[in-house]
Image (tube, rainbow, N blue to C red; front, side, top):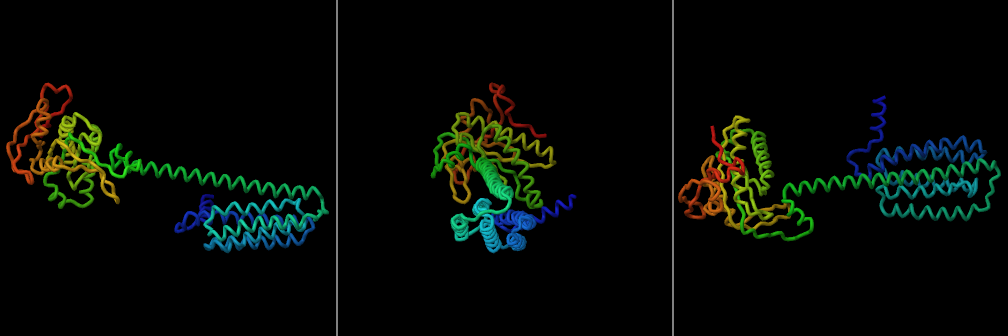
Length: 417
């Protein structure tokens, strides 16, 4: 039974290379051809019983026509089987009206031809052929068969008229249901695509910036007078990566950076970007906050603890250089091919230099950051160092939180084994 159902399903499955419209035509066309062929086959004995041999003979032709339609659709044709179907229905309606009169209700069947037009990949000229042919034939048949009198059993004529009316209404309901299903599926697909695009946008942009982009704001650029920037870099990562397989390098960075992402969310900071094995975080953008320096210091200590936990779990011996600076920045969105929310200014450059000129397992900060935190944190003065592009600068190592703020939590430099 399962094999039979699989065979039937495969029989009606449209080739994958076809467009959605072509696939829809393939499936619905095959179903229509089978139903129409069976319907006309059942009419052959009916018309013989009604003593209308001409209609019985025509229905033999109809069955052969729908077999041809089925065969042509299976081979990828669109217009030839559609034209044959249109011709068959028009001839059938005309003959029924000629032999049985207007009261047979066969004229209703003409309007069933107009329903599939918008579902199938027809060109405009063929759609126009449908919409012109149907009303013209309806008018001609209606005017020409007005005097035809049915001489057979009136109950048979009534039953035939009801049958045609039921077919017409059935097609209306089926097409309406099918169209409603198409609309529902399209709406669900749109909602899903919207959710995916929203998630992607929020994944690469801060939420407030994403909202501004969705409102068609063309230029997004803001000045922030007070923010804190942190750069973290894995010490000697380049030689390490050369000893690993590419997949291992990606897995290492993905695992470690995913843990840092969780810390960013915990401290409500803003991840700006990763550059190779370096990670850039900002506090105070795109939403201003007065505790940007404190929050960044707490994040830096958690960053060191996270790396220790990672080393313990994986058996690796990685070390971070961490640099922090505070000051004004310009923030905005750049790019057309791929959007990027980025920060610019001397504050950013100096924070990067604090990391690159730092020492393993140390949090090096500038005097600007130290001045913001000196009442709550303990520092060790490193002294004056030569900083590329900046000249001589006095820098400090962030050591721990002072006892007066210990109640805020364990935000002190972890001890390595």
